Amino acid sequence: MPTARTIATALNAVLDGPDMEISAPRSLASAASGTMVFLGRADTEAIDRLNQIGGVLCLTTTENAPLLSCAVIQVEQPRLAFCRMMQRFFQPPARPGIHPDATIAASARLGAGVSIGAGCRIGEGVHIGDGSQLGCNVVVTDGVRIGTDCHIKANTTIGERGFGFALDEKGLPISFPHIGTVRIGDHVEIGANCTVVRAALDATVLMDHVKTDDHVHIAHNCHVGPRCRIAAGAVLSGSVTLGADVWVSPNATLIDYAEIGDGAFIGLGSVVTKSVAAGVRVFGSPAKPIGQRHS
Picture 1: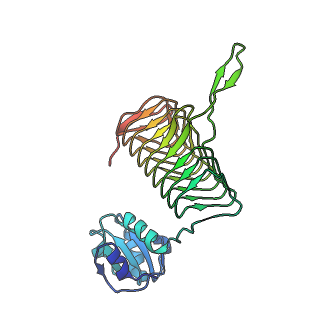
Picture 2: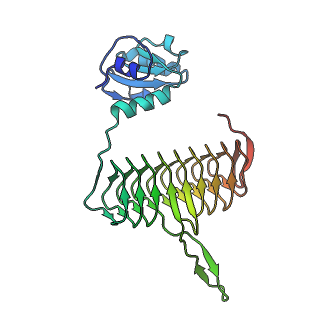
Picture 3: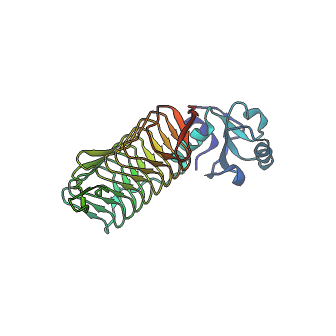
């Protein structure tokens, strides 16, 4: 177990108060002696509770620190610092290895330290970079490339053909062959039960540090810029382009070919029927601008 002083050193900060062993990170509601919490905004009720418990380590702001009698480490961004300390000291390490129930094509290339869960199916010519982790029953079809340090959760499918048809002379839908691929950058996280569809001819792309929640659908030919975050239930229709740092809220739907500018914010349940300029916040069905996004 780390000590409060060890955590302060890791944050390049100063411990104000007694040193102690820290057994676990906790929420403010479940704080107990020997645990670590964070407090971002001023909260009189939370401060009173922490002062009554004693023996707690709190990562908090300069403004809150004088109000607390427990051990304190002052940081500019308490939530971020708490996240980093959880990763460093309390998150179980990944266990590299290939589950015996996984099926991996002979031509697939796996980097060092890759973890492949039970029931996974990895196709021909797939490339998975160092340190990436695939949960149970993930399907990665032929030719897909996944970067380093990616995390793909259970039951997600990457690289199946998309929903595209041409009508023949009788009006019957003829399936459009999808012979493109999917390219996923480094440090990407894809949630459980997601689908990332291969491009018709070129590539569906998720750039570095993209994060998706569970139950997200990314259709063929989409291009998702770096550091985008896409919440649960969102649907990106074919050929959608997201710039860098876009936020897509739960259950939002984006029409095909929509172009979303850098730093835009797509609100809860919004139906985006046209492109959105950089930095703009949109809400509603159809989605309408309501101002600029604040950093």
